[in-house]
Image (cartoon, rainbow, N blue to C red; front, side):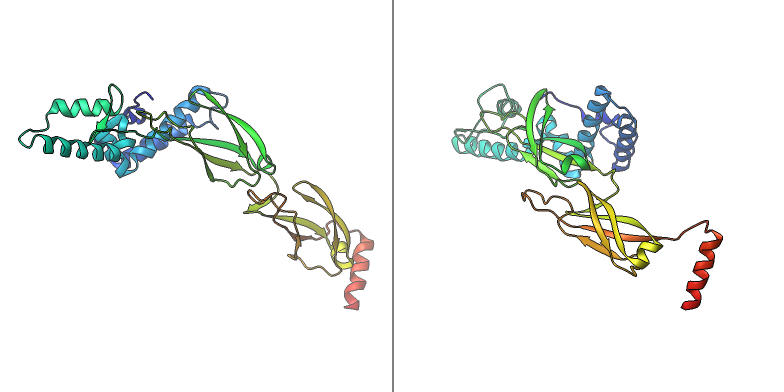
Length: 294
């Protein structure tokens, strides 16, 4: 993978404080956000680069690794360990000898391309870089299991998205990250799901919640009404003398449970009593009579 200067990506210097990094990221993220630049592939790619840079530089530990090892920062721990092993091997073979700058450069280059990397007499293999991606879906799309083709690093990846994926949930696609070094395994692809809910239902895990208007007559006398569920309408019986704010549960009419086939949560309906308006003279007369009976 080509080297990316994260400081240049955010337009800041290497001495930038955490506050400066945060401010620069927010400004650029707003400017290049996909919602503000629909169908703009360049803005979408820039937004990904900005997020990647921020993820590294806003984390003190990762930032130090990046400052010390540049494009190989994700292999920093493996590199230091291998370096120590190599130094030990050299010291035992030649106690009087030092570890020259040339040795250091050769060793670093051999680890990450340009030679055969060895430490303690054995070749050192490194896992490839992990990739991160975000996939935006509508709530309706995660109600059923479906397949989706993603393009990552100019490669098409066909994945299955199980029903019931949560907003913010991350799944790992093994082996679809960066290529391994010296025959090491490929990195992994981590996909974060951003689930947008534009429905009338509020989702909480695998349960759904909704409000239904109920007129005073149906509330007093009872009867049947049609209510919306996520996959269609159902008939619901209203009990006589139902009070405002009454909650009823429709079992199994909620959201699919993640990776549990044919298992669903429940739908909770809250009745919202609607008072009649613009009463006629006759209606007022009848309500007056009713009030006298009470």
